[in-house]
Amino acid sequence: MTEENAQDRQADAPRPQDQVLVLIAKPGAARLDDDLLAEVAQPLAMFNAELRWLEEEGRTAAEIAFTPPPPSHYNPRSLEDRVRRLLMGLPIDVAVLPLGGRRKKLLIADMDSTIIGQECIDELADHAGVGEEVAEVTERAMRGELDFRAALRERLRKLEGLPERVIDEVIEQRICVNNGAEVLVRTMKAFGAHTALVSGGFVPFARHVAEVVGFDFFRANELPTADGRLTGEAPDEIVCKDVKLRTMLELVEKLGITTDDVLAVGDGANDAEMVKAAGLGVAYHAKPALEEVADARIRHNDLSALLYLQGYRRDEFVTSN
Image 1: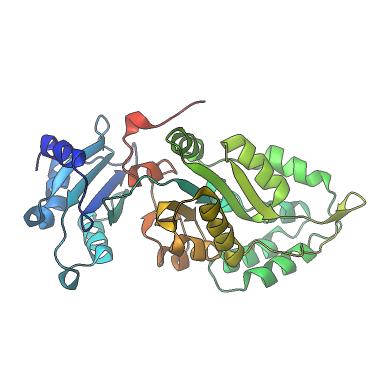
Image 2: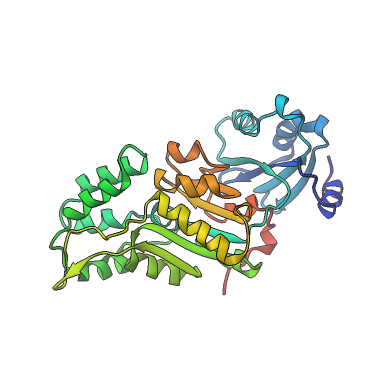
């Protein structure tokens, strides 16, 4: 297995059945040294396995292309689980994906706990003095234990009377964009992709985050107010998992692409339908309900890892405007 052979392979169009095993080490916490890579690659040696570095200087990202055996003898998730066991708890993300068509033309992302590190409704509830009880409902909804629409209505009722100015205070003081979000969006846009933020949160937050990160489009829930205060009512249409999926399909049609051209990323059960339908569905530091249906699971790295999943090299990342 040589890097030169891997570069030759990259120049050729991948066969439809070809797969790639992607390994992404958490910078500063793990490295992909030669012994580790040899151990991981050993089970693939008989399947024309070839290595390509995605980030060689720090040895944090590499991929191994291979032609798998027939489906009756091969399961991508089983291979991923086997590699994770070999890694013995090292902070290295693993994904097994099709080699062809990896660079997606549409990124559609959840906002709360995905693009940002907070749940906006929990932050509002903290100001209203009901933070703990609202956060508990949020957590259960994200695990898929509660109907999202009903859970949102229940949480909004607890915010009735909260001054509208608190929204701006939360945005200014508490909302932080997750590491790698801007690099992910800038890089995909630089290579011609469209980017969309679709949130079960609220329009004021989504508008701010979309502007800061650079998304082309956003959709979120209206947050009803009257006389300068939150009414505690829910909007007529709630952005739940069905609406997220419908938004994705609308964008696919508008852009003249297919769902195979889509990268969808989220963290909770409300993201499951769009993640399942996308060509590359990613569970990002996610709840088990989403991990189960996703194509890839990022547990250790930041959002820039989604570029490695698409085969981008580190020197292709766009780190500034």
